[in-house]
Amino acid sequence: MNQKGIDGGSGPQFFGFSATIRRFRYLPGGFLDRFSPGMIGCAPAMKTSRSAKLFAESQQLIPGGVNSPVRAFRSVGGQPRFISRAKGSRLYDVDANAYIDYVLSWGPMILGHAAPSVINAIKKAAGRGTSYGAPTELEVTLAKMIREAFPSMEKVRLVSSGTEAVMSAIRVARGFTKRDGVLKFEGCYHGHSDYLLAKAGSGLATLGIPDSPGVPEDFAKHTLTVPYNDIGAVRQFVSDHRDRLACIILEPVAGNMGVVPPAPDFLAALRRLTAENDILLIFDEVISGFRVAYGGAQALYGMKPDLTVLGKIIGGGLPVGAYGGRSDIMDLIAPSGPVYQAGTLSGNPLAVTAGIETLTQLRKKGVYKLLEDRSAALAKGIGEAAKKAAVPLTQTRVGSMLTSFFTSGPVVDWNTVKQSDTKRYGRFFHSMLEQGIYLAPSQFEAAFLSTAHSAADIEKTVRAAQAAMKSL
Image (cartoon, rainbow, N blue to C red; front, side):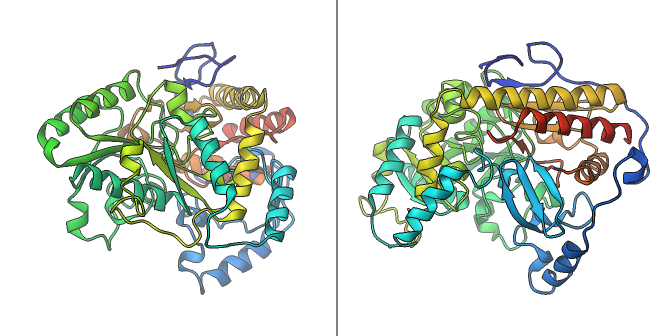
C-alpha cells in the first residue's frame, strides 16, 4: 500500500505530526452539556429565520422536509440551512449567511462551486438542447477520458446516478457468473437498491438504521456482509459460499462511514482471492474516483478490479453515473448481450459536458499537488487544535477526502467507527457552522476539499476549529 506522508503524495494517512502514518490518541477532555455559541466567544448567532420557515413548510410537503435524509441534521440536531447559491469554496444560505464548504455536494465539486469553465460549457450545451434520447459524440469523448484514467474499464456504460450504476454492475456480474450472491462490507454504502441496504453506511449509519424496511427478505438473503479490512473473514465466507458468490463489492477507500483507508495488502489480497475463485471484484469508486487520484483508488494502489463504478466528479456537479470493466463482461449488456439495462437520460448532454470539462481541468499540472497540500494543512490544523484542547480525535485522510472521528481510535472498520462520540461531533459541527464553516451534518461522512479552497480558507477553518475544540 502506498504510504506517503504529510508533505507529499496522496497515500492513506492517519494524521500525526510527522511524515509517516500515525494516529491521534488524545486524552479525553471535559465537554459541555450542550452547545452554546457564546461559550466559545463566537460572533452573535447567525440569523436563520428564513431557513426555519422553509424547513417548517417543506416538512408538510416532503418526507422529513428533505430529499435526501442526511440533509435533515437529525444526527447533529438543529435545523438545516437552506442554500440559495454557491461560488468557489463558499455556500450562501437564504438568510444571507456565508460558509466555507467542505461538503461540496458530497464530493463532486472538486473544482469548487460554479467553476467558470464548467458553467460556460454547460451554458453552451444547454443552448443546443437539454436531452436527446439519442447517442452523441460527447458520450464517446467522456468514455475515452474515463478509460484513459481507468484502464481496467475497457468498456463503459453511462447512467444517471451512482445507485443505478452499482445496481447495473451487480446485475451484469450475476449474468456473467450465473450466481446470485453478493459479498459487501459493513459500513460501505453502495446506493439504495434493495439488496445493498444490509448494514450499509452513509445515511443509514447517520440515522441509526441497520437495514431498511421494505426490502424483501428474498432479496436480502443474497447479500452477505463482513467487516471492512478483515481479509480473514472474507476468506472464510468465500470458502463457505464460493459456489453462490457472483461478486465482492467494496469502496476501495471507504467514504460512507467516514474515511477509512484500506489496510496494507487488503485490496491485493481481495484481488488474489477473487481471481482464484472466479468471483468478480467490483470497486465502487463513486466517491474515490478522480478524488484520491486522477485514476482513483485503483491507480493509487496499483489494482485492477473486474468492474468499476463511478459517479459524482464525472458529472461536474450534475446527475451522472457510470460502470465499466472487462470487455467480455460488459459485452453481456444489451444491446450487445442479454443483460438488460436502459435509461432515458443516460449520457445526458449537460452532465456529460460538465464531466468532460471537469476532467480536462483535473488533468492540468499541479492540480492534485494543490489538493494534497491544502488537505494536509487542514488535517494538521484540526489535529493540533484537538491535541491542545485534550479532545480525543482520530483523523483519517486519503488525498482530498478526510474525516475527524471523535474517538481515541484507531479507526479501521465500522465497529471502530461506531466508537465515535457523535454528541461531541454534533457540538463541534454547530460551533463550526456558527463560525461560517459548513461540515457534513454527520460524524459518519467525509469532508472534501476543492481547488477553490485557498490557504486563507484553511487558516480560517483551523482558527474556527481551535475555538470549537475549546468548547468540547
